Image 1 (cartoon, each protein chain N blue to C red):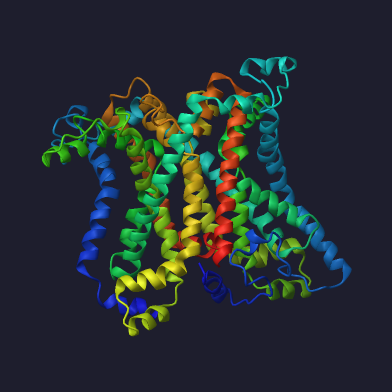
Image 2: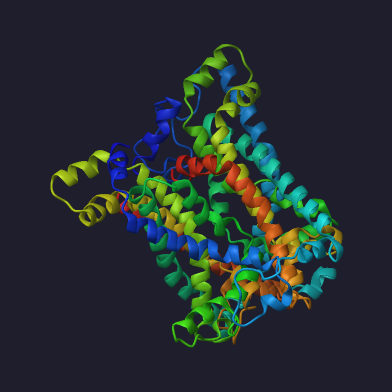
Length: 278
Length: 335
């Protein structure tokens, strides 16, 4: 970190200008979306486009509630993403610990299977998975939306990489003190895994929240739609001229994940640094 | 990444007797020796570990078997049959057809088109995303002293955004008449094309959109790699009279090589499977100009050609494995 201190002395102004330019390109579309969500449709369509709304209105957001069952979509998204996140935190850390610190027959095979699964494209499993879920009678159910994603090879890999770095002496000491293996896992190891759990939690929540192909196929009635599904069907469907409504819906999809990300981004970046790169 | 293990070891305070020499202990050698907690102890301890190990593995393995490995195998089996959606109620009507599906895909013109589009998407998209991500990471790491977190969050915003929301706003931006992009071009006196409905510009538009969406992820990855490079190296190079560019070229880039490869492969694997962008933006059109392999598989599923779709999916799988293997070869050859 010594040079960063040195480099800090001359933060050249032009770097700020370039970065700010990049920021405009990356964030500008979102600002435009936010502004668009408080414009009436006619103004959004105007040529040339206006930046600031002439007469800001919350009608688009009101319509989310009056014309769509927005609260239900929102709750579905929270429920599915929440359950998937909890499942991943529990199951992936369990296997991650076993792979990192316990000697059991078949360990190498299990780890190789996990790594192999990382490379399987989603399209390979897509249809057999759907056939399975429909045979189990889980189409259009929360179980069908949640169960297949309760654990992920990526999560196991991430937790295993992190836990491998924990000192063995700590675990050995707990064993000498007579703690059982499960107790060591729950009381000694897990409390040390905060950054990795935070990273896995954020990544899982984000990808589950944003996932839309699977819920698009499995959720067939409106009371199982998640937010992206509702928005996608709405954007693609016949209502796709209701621009203001689409903008407001997009804002509603983004804001929750944005809040989660901003609140936890410190852990997240740290987590990528410690685990993603190993 | 070279010093990532060192970075990691510091806070936990644990030097472990494991394979510290290899950069990717897990990947190069599954199940590294000596990384388990147990010094050779009493037999009871090992049995306890065995039971606990399997006990902890079991829930995951159950989910893995039912929802991951099972479907992978089922897909493999399907690819050697003429399974169609109509056969689901009458499994006896399904016949094994050997490698017919694989032979058929060799002569499939549309698939060839999709493969070419996918190759372009990877070849253009990966370098573009990496250059943008690296530039942002270097600027944040060395170029500025304030607002770092602010920029980082802003640059990461597109990564955490639902593709559906991205599509809503990008379709507006790229509208031929009223879109922001063409409005700005018109102010410069340029007559912008109908980006998404012109066969020449549709795919490049999606490439740019993907780079816009994913550069934030690579920025964070590269930033972590940059911060692991010891500052003394830069100081020594500076004392030897190296300018900023020479230091970047001869100190930063070589040390960042493993990180760059990691980022390149992760991005490449993702782009090989690109599906969501055309799904929400163009529907694969115009005239299949944005049809990707993954999208074509999805279409074949939609048509009910399950066996054929599974065969194409396996070819894509092989491509992903090939890309990953190439990466490890590259890494091993120089690290």
